[in-house]
Length: 85
Length: 465
Ligand SMILES: [Zn+2]
Image (cartoon, rainbow over the protein chains, first blue to last red):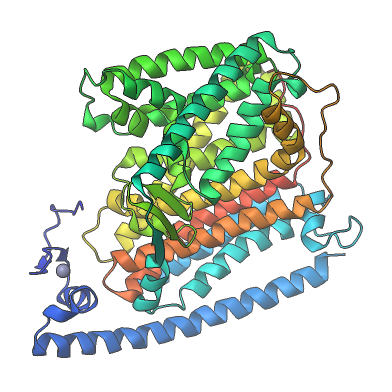
């Protein structure tokens, strides 16, 4: 895989597969999802925390996505009522 | 802030969509648009802009729905599901030998009957086999069932029995020769009379055979048919969508399109270009065969531009726009998301869904054509040497227009799921996986609307060629 080496940013390297991530949190999420058996106790705790934090973000995203879907549905319903004959 | 900017871009996509819908003729509801509402022509008519906006919104809404699925294990189960059956070696060699023989016999018959048979397209074995058979039916089989071209390919059969591979092929060229090869073949199909004159078709095939054999013997059969030969690359890329794969390990079945998530055999810009060509060539031939497309070309010619230049500019320019749009989507994703993935690596990862879209377009363009010509194809294959006096062509019922809409939308829905699975494989964070898809989905919405627009227009013969 090609990665951007010019970026003057921190590289958080995965010690299992050498993939690099720009933040510690992304590395934690990567290791939790890809190498669940290679984690030690503190890493498991960090992963759980990051996972639940993300769960909260996903929840708020889902609410907004649901709002967009409802708007789309009723918007198109109105358009069909007005323009389809 | 990732979110607000992405939302703004998403909004921009919706605005672009509506502008495009307004540009198209808002007055008449076409047959296809009517077909969306019901089987009967005078059932319910929908203005064209609404029909297009609904199509685009369907793709956008399904992307939003897919984003509700955030369970990595479930997504992996779907794209990793497979069953396999082994074959005995003797059975494999019987398959191979039959395929090779069939390919050689068919090629010989097409060339021979192209020169000696009747010079009428509707009764010509060569024309029926190449266009109703290979271009329509066999390509459908390749993405709906399995890619069997490697066994059938007559040029490969010949090239592998003689010594080959004398020159080494520069790796950096990748599949670019195939990109230009496919563009060239589609150009020949559009701008010359290979589709109507069997003799021209036979001559084109002789020329193609000569180039292919010399090339394959020079650089080696594996390299030639994997990277350079346009027909093989075309079918091989479509074959990646297929649920069934036949190889040395036997037969494996996966869910349709799911190989695209795990194959990882696209590597560079040329591979992305091949997938975009597959989408573009169908859009182009769709455009030039509509009344509006023909009128646009006539208008440009009236200004004083030579017809072939108009076609050429449209053909290459449109390809550039489609290609640029996808690369732009990759750039936007790479910039918006906190990642070390480059735009190129993202474009490579998100290119495979385009193949499902291309398959949907191909079905929409060729399914009706194939069904109506299938009695003719069957007759030609059963008795190639006697040409029928009254070629039988099936008349398609009106609801076939609605079927085309279903094919296009279905292709996009599958593509949305493939992109979703790919995003979860690529990004460690599920939020990143969700946001990364939206620029690509916006590009897909634009492609959907263009295709739905094209199939809703009345058809015409392309002018000047
Ligand atoms: Zn790792």
